[in-house]
Length: 572
Ligand code: DMJ
Image (spheres, rainbow, N blue to C red):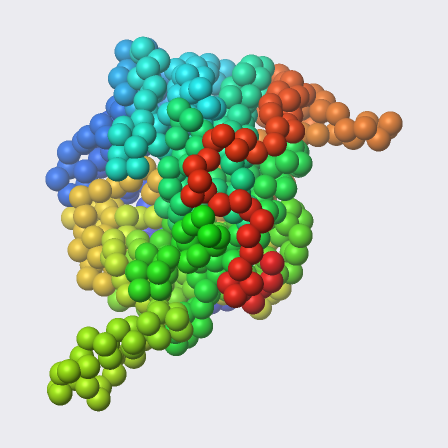
């Protein structure tokens, strides 16, 4: 029976959401089948040419990234086949492996293995995760500053970062998104060193004075200093801020220092909020933190108001933070979350395909003003243009039209569906998810029944790419959106930046009132007890060290500066 026909029954049909999640399960199988046929054991399937490639170091990235989604979706057969394959082949690939990207392999492969171990106790997979974790560790342990290197050579342990135009440096998101996986590993294996080193990277970043809680989007492993003045919540920065909150939640609301860093970053976020012209869509700009203080990049520059699909994870993050009272003003954080989510909805629903573009440039009142001035200057002497105006603003221009099957929008739909308490906001969220599902079905199917990304959200043209996050995140979030809350508790689990399911490392209060970590005995994971040792290691690392002035060049600003003109309507 064709499930998509079933799913089109009337809004109040009782089996509507059951049908939707059944469809997601089928989509997973349809996407998996060509991977299994043409690329099994490779990092990725090239879905149009039916080839495979090892673009992340050859560790079967798609397979490892998919494991916990298979378990959640009840796909036991591909799970067992993949598990067997990984247990048999990955140890050798790790032992003899070459250069791999530290961040991608941590979030996709290590995260995938640990997600599976969380949902189903599995000593063999856990041992494999331990082997991989140890092979990745030199990226952290070889760094003199604690800021990890970008690449690690699995068999020799050599760690490095390629020389870019910004010198040897690593994106902030890459240094600060691996902590959940390494803390889980530390906990499950009883080896605190994993957590100490990974958490140390965040503490190393914190040695810089932040700019309203924000850190430079690239940093240097050799010195610990910044490699750029750019700060923001898009590519290069996004999941650093996500990790501050989620690592705190994972630690049973500890350590407090991470919550404080998250709260401070919300101050920076509020200063980056802008509204579009003419529809007042709320978005987050990028900024350049210069030595004279806090300045948005030139209004004439398109990058100032650039917004990436990646930033559509923010509504979900803000909702999670507000739900857990991690910031100082949950009401305002909820408002921002709702408004940013409706901006992302607009990005999707204004596109002919119903899928949101990778990157765009918003128009704001200031950019429209600047464009008018520029127009007049340019055509001052041209009779034919002199009395005309530039075309009216239309909120945004699409800069990069691709949709590589990204998850961030459906991720936020899911989190808000779970946590939103105002029914009027909550009710449409599943419908929106269903529209995304239908758009994928309409525009992303390949001729052999699988799926591929789109090279343009305005014209449905397939690209020859099937990223592993389609299995790990996009389909998982859609499935969870259409499932009952009992499918996965957000109180006892955290979802990593790659949507892998990890346990909260439980805390229990003892009668004396002092906080102590205890055995993880009330949690379902059934593993040994090491939360106490992990948390102690985290707290002991650089706990009180003040910012080190020798680390930053003269152009990195001090955090005291505040430009009142740029404080947006949501306050400081
Ligand atoms: C994923 O690999 C992760 O979510 C990462 O943090 C950034 N983006 C991709 C999916 O878009």
